[in-house]
Length: 81
Image (cartoon, rainbow, N blue to C red; front, top):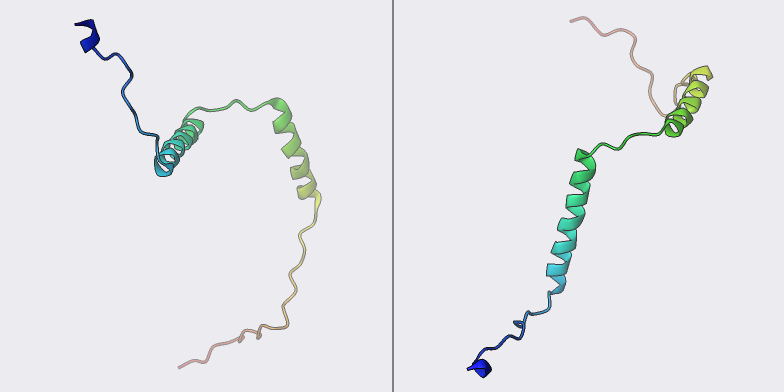
């Protein structure tokens, strides 16, 4: 009677390449969704660094755009009909 029961684990086939790709792709997608949902607090050091280049950008004077040689000048007045 005890010899009739088979307690060995069932045979499970090895996952294929596409099954592995799907599994890890879904796992990566879950991590991306969680990264969007869960906010990460910003440190004070990270906020201080971007503010310094912004102040340097404000002190720069905007460059005047020179008309390019390959464009034709626009007509100054349209013909009246």
